[in-house]
Image 1: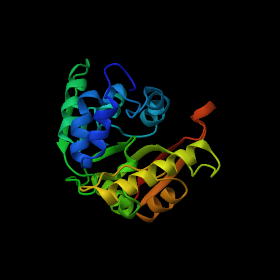
Image 2: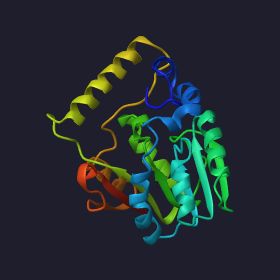
Image 3: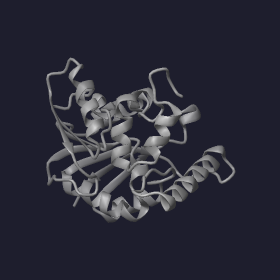
Length: 239
């Protein structure tokens, strides 16, 4: 569909009718040939801001997928990186991808849930890219609490998000249509597949982070052109 080496329509349909975890296990070998992998331009745009604004020695990539964020963290000099994801298939691809890079750094992969991470005050930096759609709105506070628990005091949570688009925009109409289809799918089939658009948006996310012990800075100037809607967020753990 997207690339000669990418998944076919029928493979995507099979994935969509699986659980979230099994669906990504199925998709993992071809995931990097889809538009779902975080675009290198987004990571390139924010890499200097992440590198220059705080400690990056120990970093955590939450819902790391096939390792796009880990590759960026390696490029800015992080010495010790952990990637966590629920899908072993995605972790296996991430391990292969990062092993091919010429960096002599420690990279660890952990199979686990973003809502129950096995970390306590360990990291200087946490990132998450392209995965907020897998966190239901009712679970966002738990998600933020888990990130707070994983970070040291002064540690940062860095990510890219946006505000709710106009109700007459194509982005809004497509996203709401997709979400409606996913709700119907989850009513008809079990186990459910959790993937929705227009989640973890500003300004509500900023308020939630502040309530859970972070100071939040939103940079609206990094992205230009058609990506101007994207905002770079740095949330620093203060308690």
